[in-house]
Image 1: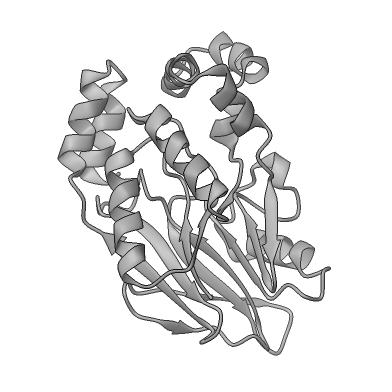
Image 2 (image 1 turned 90 degrees about the horizontal axis):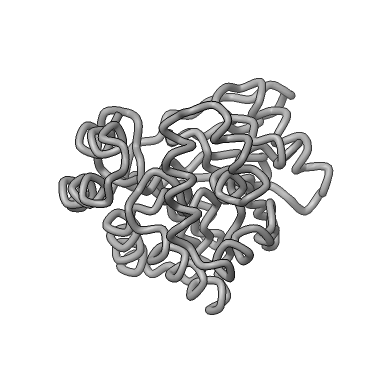
Length: 254
């Protein structure tokens, strides 16, 4: 089975469609969207609608912290302290229908398919939205996931960077630096944890969208970078009246 692993779409329809088109050309058979469908970008309705279609077609769609943020019970506290994130959350809340907000609210935090566990943040406490951004947190997440002996792979997002860690013969995790487009052997006799990057808001100085493809039959993981019309996505943010910062972030990849 070939899986397309996409996370942190952030209402960026241009990037999302580009990654989905790219994934189709890789021959993917199942799509997994690992949370943060909304926030920051100009197309929350369209992105949520597309994710609903993916879910209805047998794909996996998870809840991220931004799906939590736009709910009424979270929004009031977010707006108590003025911030750019709070402004976009309020705008996103108003764009979405009650039915769409409810659908986002009841999305699962994790999902398992065979030896794969999908999560937005850290598997040890997914509701705390902990960033898996170093070996220590990656180990906590992997240990929690692997209390289920069937799980050998953990895939998440949240950190907006692409990373891969594995456990070798000892208990310590080893970091592996991926290269875009190069398949990485990920044999099942080891345990692996990866963050697949952000489709809609990369933050490494490269504006190209991020996602990954996992081939479970070949036991190979390939991280991808996909060029898209990021300038058009930035213009859409400005046209929607959203904070200029988020438009500039798409233009610079930071």
